[in-house]
Length: 112
Image (tube, rainbow, N blue to C red; front, side):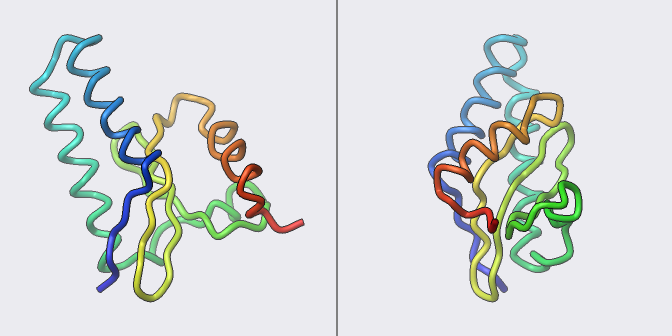
């Protein structure tokens, strides 16, 4: 079973999701429920990290990123035999590709 690790950006994403639903939508009960569902979903990656969709298949760009859909959110992660690192948790309605690839370009992780 792989170990799950959240990057600071992913942790911030979870906090922002909870804050937005709780404060902007005035629904703290839904905020707690949705964040719990996202956590439950990404915890399943510890058992089967390679069963999710490769971002390369969607974008035709060489990258190690995979993603998991959790309600309206996309969980972007990388996995090896021992670890699953969750990099971002983004709303599927936003320009998540721009957000993610801005980050990837800074880390120079896309193969040319």
